[in-house]
Length: 352
Image (cartoon, rainbow, N blue to C red; front, side):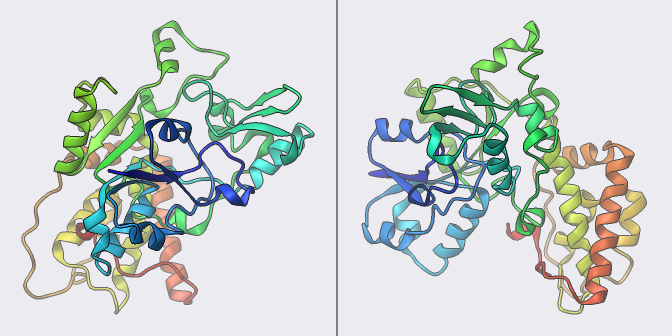
């Protein structure tokens, strides 16, 4: 490729010049743009200009950015011609940026005082967030305190509605997906790192190739000594991404509520997948009663790889999570009955 389109990760969210895409043409520029960005970014904001270059490029964005680019490819042939690779992350959504403002206020600094900002920096995960001021002070929150403590002193964390209804946080349409792989999904607190997990601070991830193109990129990177790999199983993903297992059940539970709407037509394959992955058997019969599925010829249902493992993981979720998923389904049904639901009503996992 001639260049890579990606985000400006290490910048404060309110600085407008860094809210769009970063275009990197050299290895040095790409390395300068590495890092995490848990905040809004419009990496597709100038996609027409990028395609007008008529040069091969790679794209790095959130799963929803990949979805948008794949959708655009059905209308604009230039996407498939010039975009040679799409890379993404396992996305846990991002908190509304008010929490960052409260972080600065707590430390009595302003955006103008910032010399360096990182969402995750100087470690894995390192300070989250991390700020170095122009007068040399270093301010950071611990990742565990921030994300698992509702923002700590910068909380509470709130999230946009679109993220709550996200159908693709695992990058189903990307060539490559990169994700954290801490045991049980949580890193150790920076003040209580044990010898057995100290190596995690150096950083390592699970990389999932979803296409032949992605698999080839991974092989080429290893052959070029950019990374070292070892095999990972579906169970490794489920163990290190338990929050995504919970989201899979919760999100699909909400969408199952739409089966009773007259404008929704889910085929047997899609309904079977949703029923298997959304709710434990005790709840599934209520969500998908007899006659809820469209009649007529149905496509052959091929079970997706890893689906059985996902089912087992969902079945072993704590009781309070199962109750929460049932409440999600019931709450969405109530909103639909009141006529105040704004989420999409048509969803087919087989087309993600």
